[in-house]
Image (tube, rainbow, N blue to C red; front, side):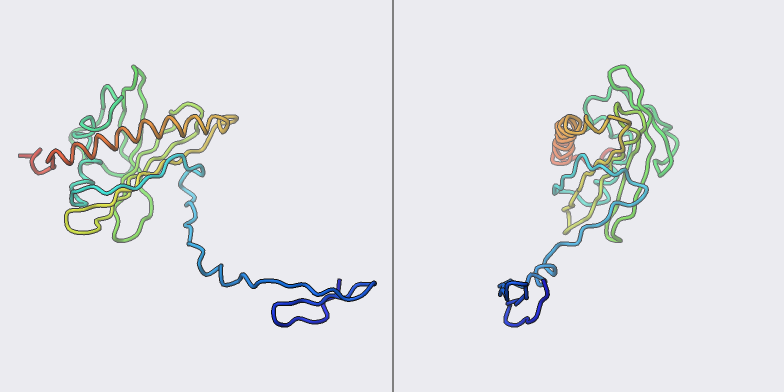
Length: 200
């Protein structure tokens, strides 16, 4: 096929048996409407298992403190029987702690990732989940207006050999567990809890 003419959204092509005229629509303008999707950074596992955004009625710094301070963790995270951590140290990237879940210790490490300059992020990583090489969960916090904060919860994983076949089930279980914990977190905040009150 050899194009011999192109005008008014038509294309005329020459074949052995003669010319054929094609009509077409220009779609290049649609490319401008496509949303930008951020690439997953190299230090973040490649499979996204959970992603949810909610609005919480509390300042960003208060929400960050409730999420990152282990002293408050058992107030909203259910299914963890005990939390072992160094009470004398401020929780920061690289610090490790242990969760006792159904009589099994799961070690986690505090992590971070790059976010927008108007956002805060708190994350944890573990290599001790079934079927996974590594699982990272992140809480991305952004104050939208005075007293209100957008919270995005993300979970990523890299799988062990054949562990990828468990992805649908793991996504379903994580959705159930995390959604319940998020509801507990919102309920705790809505009850009037704040880190300032807890300190005093």
